[in-house]
View 1 (cartoon, rainbow, N blue to C red):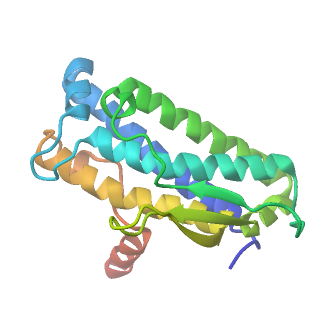
View 2 (cartoon, rainbow, N blue to C red):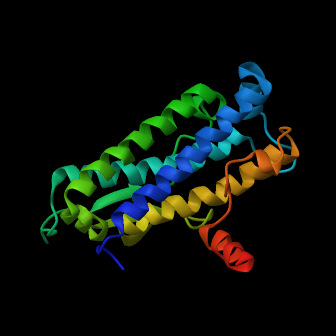
Length: 212
């Protein structure tokens, strides 16, 4: 399903995830102080084998790409895709691993705030003009490395809507890892975390139905 009122849910799901990520960082600062929280952000967890910063950086690489290409398509204002136009591309595996965004908690937080602002701007414009929904059906090509034995990326035809959904789904997976880090090594209780942190919407709905 593309179009027909799915753009706003896609935007809001990504905003909700970014809000949860930021809330966890603020919780660490409130609980342990800025200096210790910054150290916790960048220190690899012995259980998971990675840090909060590494998981945040990796998932944000995907979310940011999807947000920027959706925002650019919306600003361009092309709803009926011209056959002669070159298909936009997303190269998910051309990322900068390591670096400042994995170890600088303040910079990572600013990145999430900035990407959230992109989503909020897109949400505002979309609420005023619902014909913008057509950007979810706009075709793009997503590139991935699917094997360590081959250097070539695999090209998969997709849509902006599908990639916005993928970005949110992918982020939840990494938040599940962050949840383990937070509870097992950072001194937080599960009840301290934002509601639903690192849990798939399908799981939350399943639990909700069990309680009814």
